[in-house]
Image 1 (cartoon, rainbow, N blue to C red):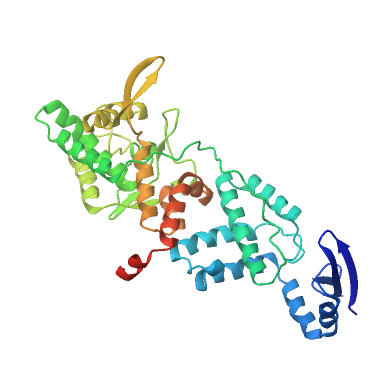
Image 2 (tube, rainbow, N blue to C red; image 1 turned 180 degrees about the horizontal axis):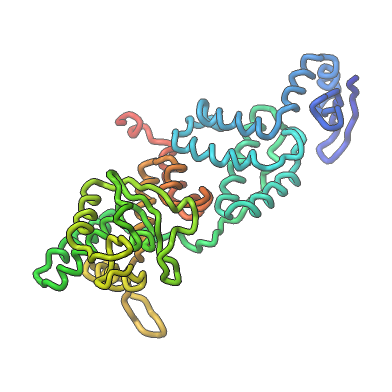
Length: 389
């Protein structure tokens, strides 16, 4: 049986109807009205109870699923539906949201529950991803509030500061700079100086492979001839920090990467015609038949390439002005990832190609690029832009 309770507070006098609600822990739900007449009408109309009960019975995961559907079909908050790329990203974030053990239904949710959710995110996810997920959850509750499922957004004001272990976004070469690197490698490999040409006969295919595959330096330095397949490279080995030849540390790092046909031919040609015979099946061994040292590769190849390509920067070190390469060998890997993101490749596929054990690593390192692509895809266009597309 429903009853009406008069409430007087800072906002004046209101009338609260308490009515049976089987889906709640107490067995009752509450709805507040400004006037006694509205409260009586609601109490006397059982169809209103049923309608409100159906809303009060909605779980948080149900609300998240409905939000996803709204994003894809109607567009949240009256906006256009999100793009397929953004929707796929939201699906990943939604799974994280639903992974939390929500203690109650949607209508019973309190700000303290959201704070506990934030704490769980910070314990289980990277800070960037925690911020991203919490922002989406606020969007979920905002949409549910607009549609009358809840009275207000209890997540408003609960946030995660925008900071990660990456103090600044990773530095990524531009397409023009990558082109300059490749052209410089070509020029050095065809140098009239026999020693330079011989050195870059080996370094050139390595630079091309690094850019085309996104492999880590410790992976392509350890590349085995048998891991060159018909259409790509199977990553099965890596050089440890101690300098030992070993397998990649994680299962995710052992992966297959599609390689451009021209680059694959270049790598095969070096393996078959120029590589020093060695007992480790190395594609790019030293003259002594061992694997190259990562530090030596960084200085003798990448450093020399940067100087020749004019990709240097001036810094002050120990009170002295010195020049150093603008990028590091790992920057080629970041460039590869940025191209995958710009091409709107599925994030799960990007995670696989990069060899990340957890997709949170992909979000954490390249989140600023993912955000940029999403904003570009979902931004409102002016009148002429819409007419001319």
